[in-house]
Image 1 (cartoon, rainbow, N blue to C red):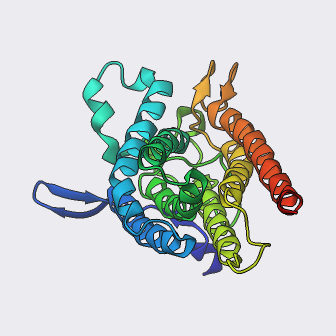
Image 2 (tube, one colour):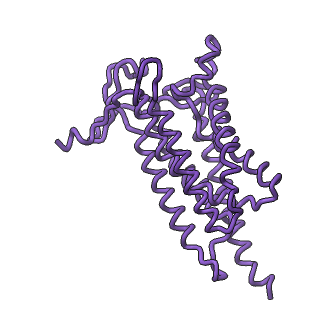
Length: 284
């Protein structure tokens, strides 16, 4: 019984179907993530003392930018799969989005929004990143239902069963694979919990409150640390100068970007902490 409970198998990508109408798990989970994120970030923005309706104003721009950025990023590195059928580029419900593309486009949207609305950039990002981590934890289950983004073959008790039609040619004779969707989902839920702990540790009546930007830097650090090792297990990485399943002759884009973000997050956190230490000296 324990063996069966730890062996995952997708029931398929469709949640509900009525005639021509099809509701897919991937789209449903993304919608749930957006709805939950809206309410959570609105609550956190209120706690941080931001403008009451700032998340409502920002969310449509942020979601649209993130989805478009995620898709463009993915298609750019998988162009060989789309160049003969351009219409497939718009079939986002079938999967094929990259979180780094979403983060890049979303960050640009937030920066421009805060500049235009004259809002504190780091405070806005700080109230968004817990929702981002939670949304990633939820959204990764879309990969499970789509039978995608799985890892190399394994015989571990928590293995993932992949149908024959979804297996890479190199692993056609293998049935069980690392459930990398699960690894990243658990990792993201953990990041979410850590960020909330840090957020509510803030004491607005104290000079020792968590400085603006700490949550943003912590998110970048923690997510990148997890993505580096999880990406190393996947059989469908986006490659630069190489080909799946192991990017032979090239490098895994997600790992390269994660190392870069890890450096940025560490440097940003160092700067924020050092500035915080200097504040009492400046006030004397």
